[in-house]
Image (cartoon, rainbow, N blue to C red; front, side, top):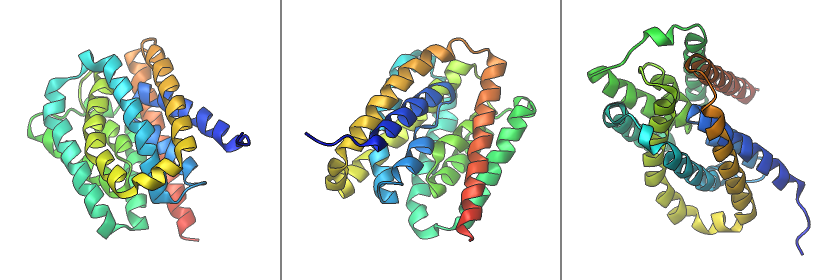
Length: 249
């Protein structure tokens, strides 16, 4: 009989919260779980292990909200965002720099503040601008390994209701996950399997949190929903700036 590992309980709680946050905002699983698993695993392996609960949680969220996907936003902003994200992820190997984290964090802080102040509600993307916004947000997210936050920040510039917002962000995330997951499994599959207790625990928590968050999403007003998304984006940006400051010491 394996001894009880208290860290697994912490992973379960954080995974539950991450799944709930993602059901409300369209992102958050990777942002919350990756730093936690990085405590126990090498960073690259932590990213790969988190990709499993991330993919499963995103798939569950997509299934519950699939009828609310805004196809117009998905076909314009979504596809270019996914392509930009994959390009950024490939460039990340060659362009890795703490300065990118600082720039990305500053952009998230700006996006979060404009959302909280109501400025983002007056910004609207359409036509060619939607494609450009998708490509740029995806590229930046891929460069620093955190696409969900900047993607949702850009999506605030579209006039879509809360369920369409989360459903469309989820559909885009599922496209990106479908492309990156086979790479992780091929390159780090053996190490991922060795970390199965963390992977199974995180996946269980994410699924439970995703289903719970779906019911909470239904209770939020459109205004409160946008404020919550903006506040979480702001908090993520501040956290990245703090991480950058710590790396300079």
